[in-house]
Image 1 (cartoon, one colour):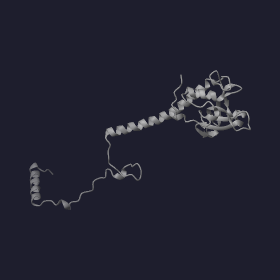
Image 2 (cartoon, helix red, strand yellow; image 1 turned 180 degrees about the vertical axis):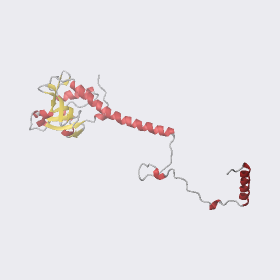
Image 3 (cartoon, one colour; image 1 turned 120 degrees about the horizontal axis):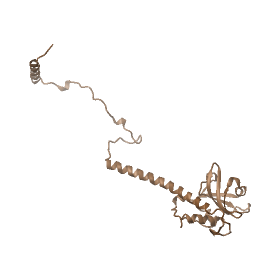
Image 4 (spheres, rainbow, N blue to C red; image 1 turned 135 degrees about the vertical axis):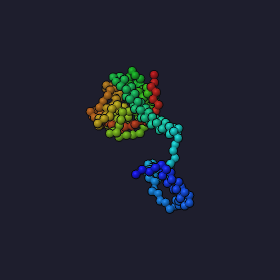
Length: 223
């Protein structure tokens, strides 16, 4: 069936005239609810107690916060690296003097005693420590032998097992799988590296271990 253009125009005119005489009451009409595209229940909150907010930060504010977070991350990483670098340098410097002969009271590279040797090594890192083992033992925080790390100091009795007085000090240069290696100035061999687990002499004389706050020190190698 074909409807002419004239018929369509007449129909529109009649409808308009009817609507003018009887206005439509919109309150009687019902519409389907709009689709729910998003709700506050979908919001990801930081914690259960926080209130939802629709605040949106500007691009500049978001960039600033991102920069601050990155700066903090870098600062923390550098602090860890700083500590590690001091210990690495300390251990490397200590090995430079392997074979140096022993001399009681020796504090210079020509000859060392145990405390004079380590005091010299620490000084090369810009760290000032006493050159007497009993005074060294008062520094830092005590740690158990099974928790020692490179850079820690171990203290031992002297030749007499009966006396509990500190008479020797060594630097931990390696600690892994229950084995601890130390470097120290010995009276018989001069500066040497020993595995504590293989040294009955020093195991029997072990007294304590101390960890120095190397992460708080500014290591500036001495020329």
